[in-house]
Image 1 (cartoon, rainbow, N blue to C red):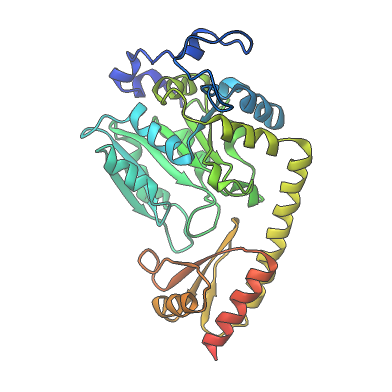
Image 2 (cartoon, rainbow, N blue to C red; image 1 turned 135 degrees about the horizontal axis):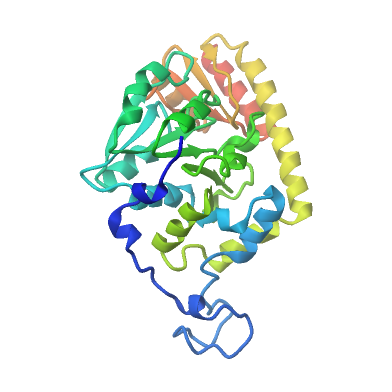
Length: 344
């Protein structure tokens, strides 16, 4: 399906003249800088690179994707929010997602005054295409958000290619947990689908949640509008330097080892959970967390908190379900012991 991105962009964004910072007008690194009203003293006195060129170059080398197809945001939440600002006219346009899923899609829709269509996933936590199909022709439906692996269910979502090939709007795939999944990332498909945005993050597998850096992979055209709309200096130099340090070959190898440990711990944790009577069901997970069903989620959650073991109570989203992040071997053992004591 041929998609005209220009027709999806809000008119005021199409005509937007982006802010031009001092570092837009002069991009060199050497010289006497008297152009940005910075304080001449101190070690952190200069504004950061507004386009994070070195970080993007490193990501380009690792993933074999052009820097022109990469955007860095202040966490994935900024990547999500800017999608609303670029494509959705408030009080007119709509977005669609599938429940249960990541709650920020709803929050961002409300902040931007955009109608959110929420379709329930089926009993296997997969998209019901027959339910979805009538919405694909809605001209005011601008974005479909798909979290895969999905939060809080943990499973990878199927039938995404069908949506890409049959929807004229933006397909936003949130791959925050993709580094833990055996499924191939959709970031390598951006050349085939001009309406595709793939969001990833340094918060999960890269263990840098406090740094707050998210990534969007998309067509050059979409990335251009992301750069036009974003705040001038949205990623601090401290955070850019931290990311660059982690993207060194030595640190990448350590990240890979940590992922293997998490995968092994997840497998062990699932086996242990199956032996605990109060755990009625353990759901399949392609992420770094496990969703379980228990007899009384509110009660189990409170008892674990009393034992200083903090998990996530998802009872309000999926009845009697709890979400458990995979911790260190020691943390996971303490969790199992705490659950066994509740069981006894």
